[in-house]
Image 1: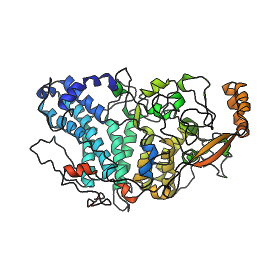
Image 2: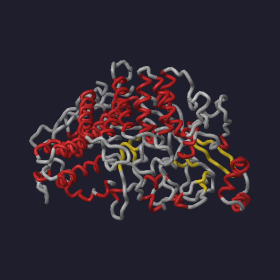
Image 3: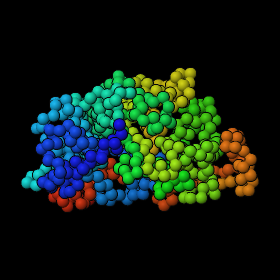
Image 4: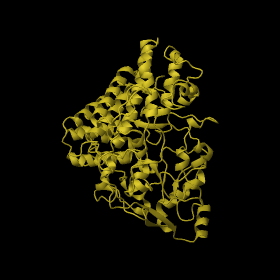
Length: 575
């Protein structure tokens, strides 16, 4: 069941939640607060609103801040201010705390209370993790504050926040039901496996150089390994795993790979339950009221290996790379993730539609890089449907669990286990196994080499899913990977007169034309590399690994310390 089908009960949430000032809870409207925790329907409606408020969702924002897409402005060029990152969801945390403070006083059955508490604890952990990965330690507020309380709460240490996040997740793991693939319970509600997988992600971050630059803190990688191994094995026992079809992950709802999901179902007038990610990503010629997001840069295109898993241009590859025919003999994920000039992309249900990105091939807001993102784009949707898409957002899928497990395993010397996880992902992708069944991975890699292989695999497998920026940041890789560089794209121009090209196009059906271009593309088109970052080199700064607390929050709370590295900063986020 999609959450949109019961979000209609948000009026209850407005009476008990934050529709007015978050500290003013006297006007409860039509629902008596004391009744909620004695009535399963009312309590469930309250939790449904917690879902609506706290589930992650589609966003084109984060791809701009990495080497996936163009854009990113102040993040990429070293121009962030203390007010650039303002994520402060304490109103939502308060609504969660209200449930946790009151539900045990009601008359619900213990099994009912446990499930609802587990869901609330999960989302409190989620919100605090999202805060900590941005700022480090933040004020830990675990009870619903009253106006008579001391509201000037200091920042807790980062370690204390992580400890609380893990405690909440451990309790959620105990309280939440076990849910197997294909069962009624696997409907988008968080479950035991979801909490275990998120715990693995949290501990992976905490072990990473963002939180431990010297990598000398004992036990963190072991804890990350233990949590991710446990999550992997438990999820597998419940039928979760890699979806056989990479391209279909987003369209086969609640498939075996989907672990943490926001579900959408568009209905007229119910904009809460739809998203415009598809419209923002599609070409404007096939979009409505949105476009310009997720435009892949050349560096992202070139990151995909050949079909045998070897990098482009590798003399040991069985396939020869030709930049003019960049789609040929590549990792199949390339053409399932990125649309290029001459790609079959049957948007809006148009049979035989080919995507053109050459100069003159697009009339409306042509792509600045020569490419589009096609991952998670439902080709059957008309432009109006794309603007109000009901495609589910999968925040965490089993492939990431494998990658988290592989990374932690490698860091504690279990590189053989990392090989197993990466080869499983590359096998599903359709890469050739090779004589050694390593799917293009180099044999005998040491820890450093395997780490590089894992980060590349994360870049490819999770491309345009909002993960690359956070990976570069938690691994402190911005300086080594991107600083001093500029991103690029292609300007693609016809080499023959327009009339001649149009005549050639009209003389063939789509499949014949594609077959013709597979052998003759360079007779018609010329690629000119162009710089996307036209004004500045990428210049990520060291203090961006922990963002500043915005001035609006400092002004409201005189006990908040600013983060070290920012003006007046005294709070150490590494403690």
